[in-house]
Image (cartoon, rainbow, N blue to C red; front, side, top):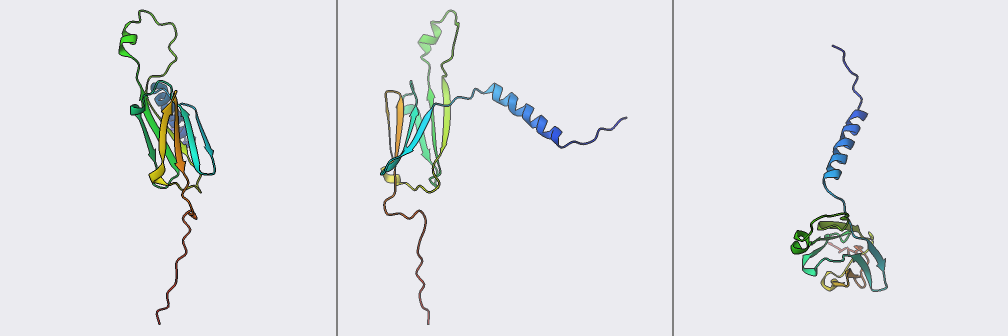
Length: 145
């Protein structure tokens, strides 16, 4: 019986094959997003045409580093059932999730964060904390004589 030499790069090849199979099973879809800053806030604008606002979820991480927007675009069942033959179906329906990395030095006023959806565009406004030195704290030293 011939033995084969162990090559650690074979493991990477197997992982790559597994990941490609998984990505083929689940469609990857993300709406386009813009992230920009004003003097008062960080703004995240994301296209989400056809998504009802009650189907959107927005989460800001505890460390203010990531904003996750998830939701679902639902296809009208009646419209789908009326089809007799399909020639091209490119519009994505189903659940989606988009995680956006935010600037590391930013801290936000969590009580004032707002989100609105108008004409297929979601706008999340994350106001900056005023007079905050981004985690820097001066600790007084007391004399214990």
